[in-house]
Amino acid sequence: MKHIVTRGIVLARTDYGEADRIVTILTPDHGKLRLMARGVRKPLSKLAGGIELFSTSDLTYIEGKGEIGTLISSRLQKHYGEIVKDLNRVQLGYELIKMLNRATEDHPEPEYYEMLEQAFQSLDNSATHLELIKLWFQAQLLRQAGHSPNLRTDTDGQKLKPDQTYNFNYDDMSFTPHSAGHFAAPHIKTLRLLFSRHTLQDIAKIQDLGDQLTDIEPLLRIMLQTHIRT
Image (cartoon, rainbow, N blue to C red; front, side, top):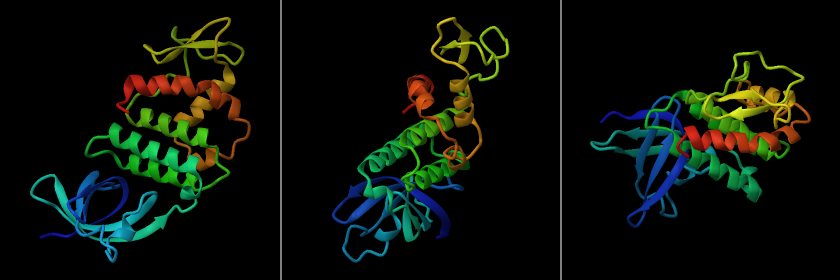
């Protein structure tokens, strides 16, 4: 049987039988895999070290006749060990993993793998604000699914103005001018960053995003609930 080699990130693990475990793994080139890791819960298992959470691993597997293949070997490539030292970072890490797993089909684009890897890198850095990581990840999920908001023109097709305040129209996914609107130019600038292709690491270098992140959190949360199955 053909052995397939790939790199992966564990999204979920389910105990099976006395010593086995079914793992759901996100890969950059084979989509999401469900693999049986036989004997992985035994103390001397050679597979266990390569399928840790918050890690990237080199994996070898064979396809099964059904939807579950068999994991043959696993070798840890990178473990983001700083994440597990902080309960808040662990909790957000779990949340992002579950969010991506529910939001993607069996064959997601490679960009989803890159997103999760970037999120792990930032979670592993205690200097990166947790709210920034979460909101960037939500924005990127929306962008990848084709649900980016219009951040250039308002609901009337007019270019967004730096001295105007706006409310957000979720039906049109665009801003509506309002004299007492909740959003202004700094919020829109921050949203453009979050929905851009800039890396999370580059965005994290920008100062004074805190207030804007707090204000736009409800907006992103509602967008996500409306358009993405999370």
